[in-house]
Image (tube, rainbow, N blue to C red; front, side, top):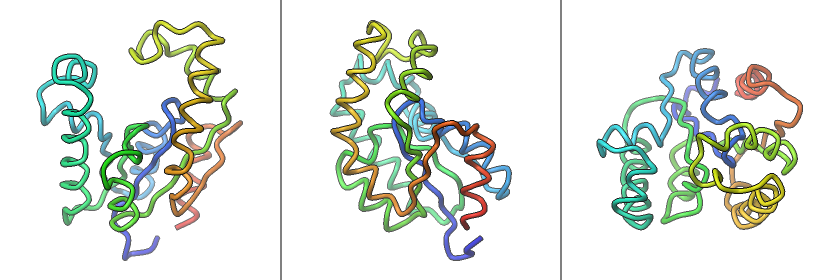
Length: 174
């Protein structure tokens, strides 16, 4: 492990396993694990869907940026799972690259579709989509976000790997 880097950020599309991989990686490194969405919810006293519904996306993105910078500028070390859209707003990607060792958990559209179809009920953004619409939705979002995700210092292909394998791969890359 590079002793100079004390913050690891995991980015990728929803369903790429950022939180699960992050928890495992945190244990391997003996680093605390933080899920940015959970951190925001705790600070705001509202769940992410409620924040979007009651205060709007612009408010959410401003708070997301403030909390991300708060974490990245702290003296703490941790593994941080970002929200799927986090790298795409404000100056978030610049801050991520400057203050952390970043990893893009890169999954194919088919892998993401397979995973997300099972989780639709727990994800308000996609709950009303058919399987075909879901695949289209993922493809469109990945196209829009790819330029941000691919700026990560490290890209980890995750298709056909379980979270333990992915965390171990990241751990051994240190």
